[in-house]
Image 1 (spheres, rainbow, N blue to C red):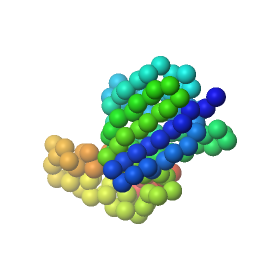
Image 2: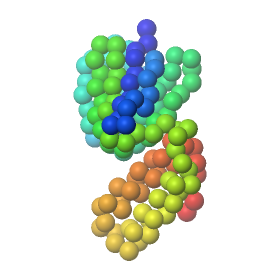
Image 3: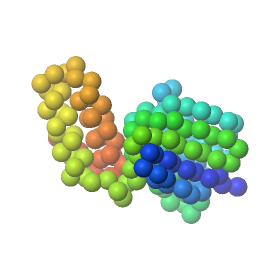
Length: 133
């Protein structure tokens, strides 16, 4: 029996559907959830969340930090910013990547630029776009 998967940001519901498997990256590493998983709450890193849907397809979602909760037959992801692969503006993500790389070239200790670089890389990876370097 599949479980319900809900991904929510302040903008509203980003994704809602059924899944057989959800894979996410937490501060403790990658974790996968299948129906019947024990209750769990974890802190997410900027990375992708992969939902294996019941029809055999996958939904990729760029998540920029947040939380994941598993309870009974529900997986809920709460994130400040999340984007479905189809909603990612590849040109904008590429420009953000280049700006972050330039900022890090000027100041390798710039933590904001490092975070921006990770967000851009995540967006591009979820969109399936190669990073131009």
